[in-house]
Image (cartoon, rainbow over all chains, first blue to last red; front, side, top):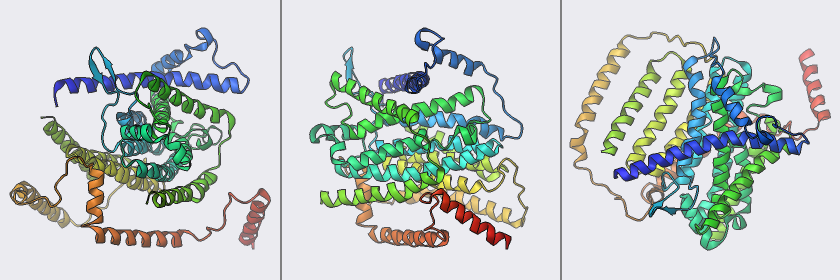
Length: 326
Length: 191
């Protein structure tokens, strides 16, 4: 392990952190604008041309707001919970190849922090730990709405982890590796996995909505019944960290789905890189689209969907894949 | 050098986390510290090159087991300190003696480990996911199957215990049926 490797890794980590923190902010602008157009409104339009500087104004507001720690909360856990959400989201990014490798000034750059053998398992595992943010935040808040939200967060995450894990098992059996780079290579020679594993693709996509807490499954912080759920007692940048964590998770899962099922960056050319970014943009847009188009489901419907519909389908899919492969 | 730094850092962090778990009076501190300790343990697997076991450690212990603990904790007020009953004083003496013996054993462990030969040495070119699978389905097949049977028993028992009204699903009922159900319940409570 030489120092060049160390410096390269640190630079990569800093770049990913900066880019995706900024993207999380810009993501809120896209979300508000797209939702507005779909609902025949204008959205943010006063700050800067077309309101593009709105996220900057929001950032200033969040950074300068007073950081209130209410009485009666468990202060240390209350303070650390938002950091867990944001940190786990970025930790998961360590095993995601964002672009194909490219050369700059004669130096080959691998745009992945660490290509470990168990990439997808690591990503899913670390994203699952993101559950501790809402859970601890809700339990430390000394607020009944926050507590209900924390309970729902635990239920939803544990349930849909099963679905995403089982759904991803069938493609893993076909590829024979857990590394996302190997997934990309396999799809380059054998065609996209979405054609051979359409069921797994749809199941994983549905589970992605639950794990990022987006709208059809947005029960964790459902505005009309739980105020802001686990975020009710938070203010200023601590609440902002929850937000950054959620949006970073959306971006990362939007990278993971195309890498797993839609060919990733293909042969690694410039075109392939842009194709990956395009696919990512589509999946991110789809998150916003469903939020504009669909209402939330009830908690009992969510559990029913997970355990009585999605999980049996996922198991049957794994069994059929196994039989076909034999 | 990096490995040594990482080892001592994570060893320190793991021990301090578990120390917090046993000494704190605040249930949420204990929960958080236990979860953090489990994650720090996975670092040792990563340092040793056992990526698969490291990831599984994170998923199983932190993602599933600890989340279930947390789910159980919803039933009491976690924002208040827990007052523990001071039991038998001899327990402390016994436990300290035991831990002293353990420390001696840990320090003398390298003497034993010099004589250990790896039965399934690492093969180059095969990921350790495959290696775990091969060992699990050859040498440890019977313990593996026994564990599977035990899990099946636990699952059946869980369903039997929890599944009293399992065929009744509020999701599949329409509003009129739910209203009827509520009225029946009210009648029973009134009479």
